[in-house]
Image 1 (cartoon, chains in turn cyan, orange):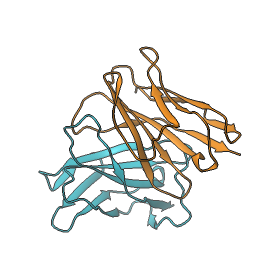
Image 2 (cartoon, rainbow over the protein chains, first blue to last red):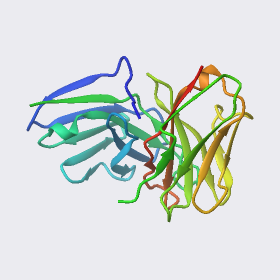
Image 3 (cartoon, chains in turn cyan, orange):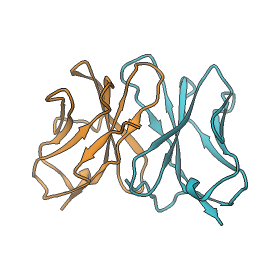
Length: 115
Length: 114
């Protein structure tokens, strides 16, 4: 399940440092946002989600921040590990109550963790 | 942890041929989806399926595409007459609940049309 794009922005991080991955979303009516991680040969793996009535949500080593004013979403990874090396996608959804759940994906950011 | 399973992992076909991509969603999930990713491009929504019918489909999902849940476990995507531009990774996804809840994706089928 390669998601490699020839022109993916890349974030190089030293192992143990914190990572911040940014995403600008397009639809001000979007009410649900998700971060996915994609490793080489695999499909997108759910990391964390946030609804539009929140501005911050924390998981295990990850935090998602939502700024609806500027339509910006970020994913913070604490103490980045080699296993965090992957492509990270944000996705947004409008009309979350509908069965369609039509996610719109961003272009992805490649994170490379240096030992 | 339960997984969405897709087969085959790689399918090569000639232009004009029919292909069926297969998926076994997570067993207690009720909502099913197909997405695709052309190399170098974003993941794109194709179709959603609930209660044995299509809930929503994108402009990509034209008459050449169809989905089916033939039994209680499988969910298939058929492309009737493949074109070169259908070459992509095809991801199946499922979720248990409606509304705002995350999709769980399979590892994809790489379709190569020659």
